[in-house]
Each structure stands twice: as C-alpha cells, then as structure tokens.
Amino acid sequence: MPKPKLWWLLVLAPVPPILAALGEHTATFVTAALVIVPLAGLIGRSTDQLAIHAGPRVGGLLNATFGNVTELIIALFLIADGQIEIVKASLIGSIVGNLLIVLGLAFLVGGIRNKEQSFNARAAGVHSTSLTLAVTGLVMPAVFVLSAGKQTALEREAVSVTVAVVLIALYACALAFMYVTHEHLFRTPGTDERAEWSVRRAVGVLIGATVGVAVMSDLLVHALEPTVEALGMSKLFVGLVIIPIIGNAAEHGSAVLMAVRNKLDATLEIAIGSSVQVALFVAPALVLISLATSHHMDFVFATFEVVAVALAAVIVTLVSLDGTSNWLEGAQLIGAYAIMAVSFLFVQAG
Image 1 (cartoon, rainbow, N blue to C red):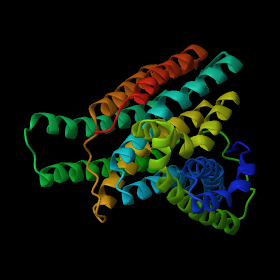
Image 2 (cartoon, rainbow, N blue to C red):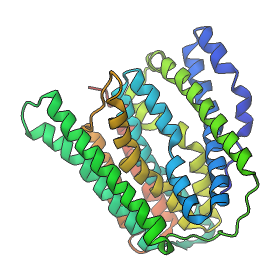
Image 3 (cartoon, rainbow, N blue to C red):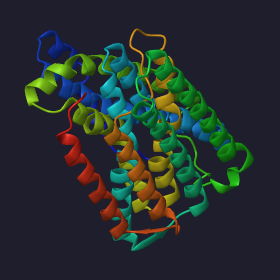
C-alpha cells in the first residue's frame, strides 16, 4: 500500500539527541516527533512488503499485528516514565482520531473526487460490533469505580486485568473470523500486487525502524513534561491529539490516498481496523505489560474519554450502515472531531 513521501524527514535523525544533550527540551520534542513520522511509515511499508510475500491470510495477520507498533512503543516509554494518564489519553486519541478525522478526511476527499463511494457494509459491520464491545470494556470499569463506593487497588486491578484478558481474547476471535473462517468477506482488490522489496530487506527495515522509533520515543517522553510547561498546553491534550497524530501520520495519508483511488474498503481497514486494534489489543496489552513495571496501568478511563469513544463509535456505525459514503459524511465526521478536540484542549489531568 503506497505511503506518503515523508522519508526526507529522516535527515533530522541526528538532531534530537544533540538537542537533548544541550537541554533544549521543546526542540527535542518537536524534532523527535518529526523523525518518528517517517519511521512509522517505514514500519508500515516493510510490513506491507512482508504481507505481500506471505500471502493474503498471513499478510493480513501481519498488518493486524504491526499496525500500531509505533503507538505501542511510545506508550511503553510513557508507562516506564509513570505518565499513565498520558498513555490512556493517547489510546483514546488514537481511537477517536482514526474513527473521525482519518475516516472523515478520506470520505471528504474521496467524495469530492468520486461523488459517492461504496464499501463492504458487512465487513464494516464486524468492525462496528468490535468497537461496541470495546466501548463496553471501557464503560464497565468506569461505572464500577463510580458506583461501587470505595475500592481497593486490588479490586481495580482485578477488574482491569479481567477486562483486558477478555478483550484480547475477543480480538483473537475477530482475527480468526476475518482471516481464517470468513476471509472472503474481507478480501479487497489488489491481491495481484508484487513485492518491491525482498524478505531480507523488509525484515531489516522493520527492525531498524522499530529500533529508531524506540530511541526517538525515549527522547520524546523525557522532553514531554518540560515542553508542556513551556507551551502552556494541557498534558491530556498532548496525549489525546498530538501523540496519536505523530504515531499515525503515515497511515492517515494512506487512508486518504486509498479513498482518492476509490478503494474505500482499504480505507476502512486502515481507519476502523486500526481503532479496533487499539481498543481490543493495544490498550489491554499495555494493562498486562504494566504489571511487570512499578507503574501499574488500570483499565479505568476518565468519563470524558469513555464518552468520546462511545460517541465516535456510534457516529461511525450510523455512517457505515448503508455501505456508501459521500463528502458530506466526511465533513460531519471532521466536525465531530473538531468539537471533541477543542474540548480536549482545556481538560486537565486528575
């Protein structure tokens, strides 16, 4: 799948470590973020090449596995730094951003170019159901905290771990449904693609880009707090809006490009599929991984975060019911995101 030409940003790779050594925190944050964008694109590009070599079934699983590895790496460094609320915000921001701004831009641009577009409504329905289950997983722990009175840390952890395990199991079931038992429902055009890279080159680029993202994420996280203070921004706004944009920039461009080419099934797989992966796999996996650190992350999200995801899921479900899209629906999705983003700007942690 073609990616935007952002490789020139890699020339900035030596800059963030130098700026960090000089104590220039804001500049370190900005340049590290810019370098992560093409590195995330390289991860996606190498994964796509490996997927072509592996065939549609294994390839689909590869894309599902590595689709959000950049966000996962950034979140792991944030957890290690004790920035749990920022991690939660970035997860919510990734889900909402993919559902509203990415899909909205794709529908808007694709609708202007092609007037009306169609997609596989059954496949979109499966994703919508998975999103509804993810919202259930977000809502119930929050309701538990609000209604169960005073809870112990052990009770919150027990609820969080149980929800995480169930959601990961449901994600595994969804993958089996999409790529094993009912793969014919999700097959998209373009299966005659030929790989441009060898397997060795694709694996090498994937490993190198992943290491690069890890290095830049470490610099980004350490510069986060001074940058937020210097710019006077809410830390949650950075988590809800800025970090998801950094991690998903290359994929955002690909989703819009597929819509322009009238390949809306691929667009939905990028936008909605990525949100499903974050909600059902990345977030629960971080809850379990955090148990091995000194900073445990629970599955209890703030009320406004849960409401944002629930509204986004409902809006996308309604839009995808008829299997068609147009530029007006795209504008409506973008408008919904703008309303949420301006609210996020003034939300403070805690």
